[in-house]
Length: 325
Image (cartoon, rainbow, N blue to C red; front, side, top):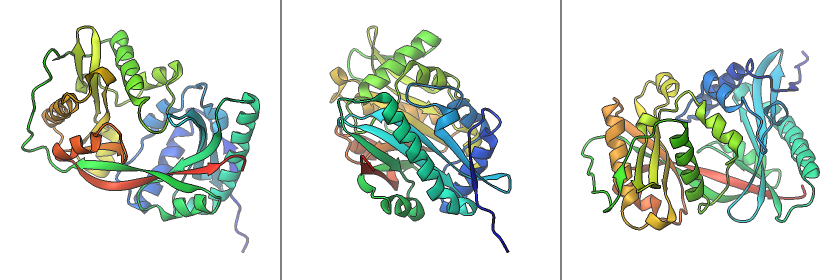
């Protein structure tokens, strides 16, 4: 019997969002990942072209007998350690694993084309990817291609929202609600500034900001943001992923971004904001909380989270490969 080979094609928005969600969730279920995606969420993420990412060309689907069984994407970012990363990500459940190498080959070609169009730059290029905890097939696939693990991130969980100790805010700071587009832009800019000190890189373009505004789970009433006069000192951008919670049968809130700007660090602000975030999530009916952190975070975040009752739940590797490839 002849087995059909997967066929690759480009992404079509918004009609492919449901197929991408199905692929991701099949992978997450098979690999024991404690996260899920919705079509609405992916449609919002992939609605816009940014200077770093063109969904129609940077996302590829692998189809078998007309059904998506895997997908991958490419984007580039400039990192805080002086590199330009071309990130190659692949997602596949058991039915799509045979298509992964072909996806990576095609995404490598896309990365090379983008690099050629950019021309000479003032920093070295690398290829990069990330994996979930325990996804040996993902790590082994990229290691075969010369990638090496260079960093680890932790997902940390607070298994309950009981017994929350709330330290005082540093003197002179106050919490204020975030309401309206201008306030959201101020929060975005403060978050971007703070994370420029952290390992890695991200798309901080105006287009990425517009994309963030359309996320279905964006709820500024969950944010806990501290001001010093007119300046944002730090904040926690909390989120309740409603579809994910429903699919997993849990009530969990995300501390999606925890940041303190340089002038206000080492004063206990992060601990005060994290504790108040746990109260906010508890008041909204959540019974646990989760966040991500760089294992080598230079600002002491890991200790802050451990003292707030978080425990390391998963270890997730970041891998890189030298360029040219």
